[in-house]
Amino acid sequence: MDELLPSPRGSILAPAPSRLRNPVRLRLPSWQELRPNWRLPNLLERRSPADAAIFLTLALSLSAGAVLSNLYAPAYQVSVDGVDLGLVNSRQSVEAAIRRVEARASRILGYEYTLDHEMTYDFQLALREDQVPVSRVETYLFDQIGEVMKTSVLSVNGQVIGAADDADALTAMLDSIKAPFINENTVSADFVEALTVSREYTPTTALRDISDMAQVLTANSLEQVDYTVQSGDTFSGIANSQGMTVKELQILNPGVDINRLWVGQTLTISQAVPYLSVKTVDNLTYEGPVAFEVEEVPDGDIYQGYTKILVEGVEGVATYNADVTYLNGVEQDRVINSTDVHVEPTTQVVAVGTKPRPKTMATGKFIWPIRGRITSGYGSRYIFGSYSFHSGIDIAGSYGAAIAAADGGKVVFAGTGTGGYWSYGNYVVIDHENGLQTIYAHCSSLCVSAGERVYQGQTIARVGSTGRSTGNHCHFQVKEGGTTVSPWNYLP
Image (cartoon, rainbow, N blue to C red; front, side, top):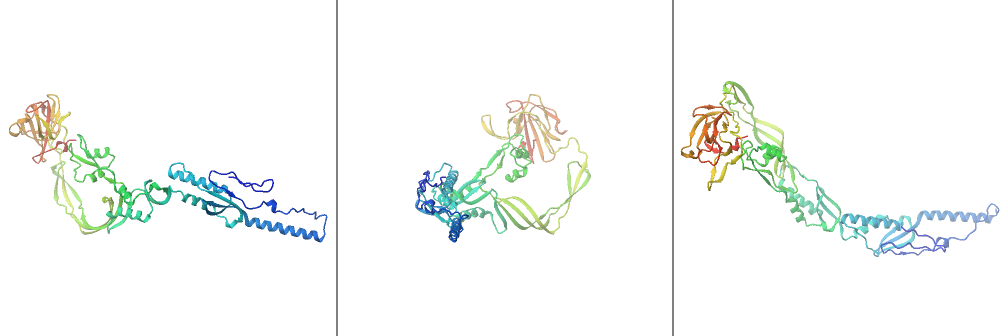
């Protein structure tokens, strides 16, 4: 900024005006006017007592001047809009403070901000200890900005949710969000997201009601999303396609048998999640079962893949202490700290078959009877001018193509549809002797007879369009315990 320079006649020149209204009032005479116009005698030539006195007086004056210069210094009494803020060492430091205030306000507000105050500078000599740091002026100027205020700011993951004057009310609101998930067993409760409450300068537009901020934090940031099972889907395949583990998908679908899905079944692949999630840990002491061990005994009289329980296992009883982790009230993890067994479990003994399996014995897993386009699915459909329930799936195929047994078993029917199955035309029924039966309908010809045993993959019939049919295909149907079920529960 501008410096005060002595003029040729000893007066002090005021600096050029700045962009703020800042007059300078000057009230001291120049140093040249105060200095005596003495000529120093040549003390080397004159050595009289008077000369010694003059020399001593001059030395004392110079010493006093040095002392005064250490105690006093030029200063400015700074006033803003008539309010005195104190003495500062230079106008330049105040102007620099003004620029800093404007730059800081511009960053906070998001647009260029300019101060508009009446600044006055009153020049004087003052004790150095009476001068104030320029930061006092800077703080005062910043506090005069009406568009900015210092308040409590709530941020989640770096995003400002809002600001409030009452920090205690803000803390109480956050505690109320945690409260529903806290009980007498809770040892810790924290927000999952990075949450901060800081005291800082913000635009006044950031001020929000506490209730409005609570509504934002408890609203769902992710809505529940459902998935409809398609042909060929598996539980693990769906989880993988959604970037989830099988366990995560199971948690969202607790009542679903992951080994038996059907086309059209609805699975939840994501659930409604609040903007702010609460993670709690409860320390629980409870009684629970103790799993029994299983001992396997080889048995040559039982076919491979089959077992027989020789001694029924019995669970024991124990008292457990565990730390259980919850996310928004849903259990995520359980760590057992200690186990006190009261009743020991009884080991279960199981005979495991080692006898070679006959080729015609069921494996328990189906293969596709024919590969082709699915022309009609399982369930309700519109056909022949009305809605009806379709008890299987229709797989298109060329006339005469081979139809294979989905699994090994015994043929219990091979012929033309009668009674309730009159619309099936030529069809085959295989009993797999494990509670399951399969039906293959609308065949052009049959390759097996009732009473025969067949193996998995064996040709049992050929594709046709007999019975009530609209084209060449294989109607494939599955029964479990005598009840028709979706083939998608068993097909790979």
